Image 1 (tube, rainbow, N blue to C red):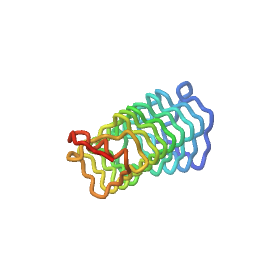
Image 2 (cartoon, one colour):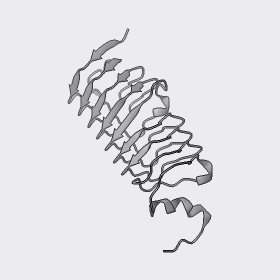
Image 3 (cartoon, helix red, strand yellow):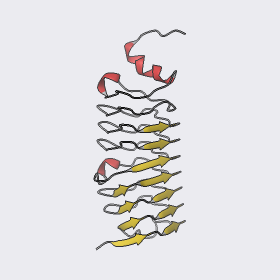
Length: 190
């Protein structure tokens, strides 16, 4: 049986050297912790916060993140598509999620605030009403993604095929939105 941790604060711990206890973490805060190359598989995080943590190379098979907030975290190449899908709910602020995979993940109303999202896979993800606030989506993939009412107004470097995604009510701003018309080889003049 997994251990239960409630309302605890964990700071400056190096779980890549010290053992991380797989368990249920409820309303816990992790500050400046190093999870690099740790297996979080089977752990449950309910209403937890991760601040300035390193998740490089973390294995997250069936890891549960519910109402979890990440701030200033390094999260390169993570497979969020392997996480427990039931109740999955996350928010990101000032995180580097480059090369991560959200293939078929439910990200409805998810906040990406000032995040680096280079080469992220959002194919078939449900991003309805998600907000990409001041985030860089350079090279990220959107294919058959649900982007209805998604907000790209302050995002930059996004590019995807308008015909291969669901976009009703999505929000964009000029001049960045013009990148979406590139495929049509039309001339736009002021």
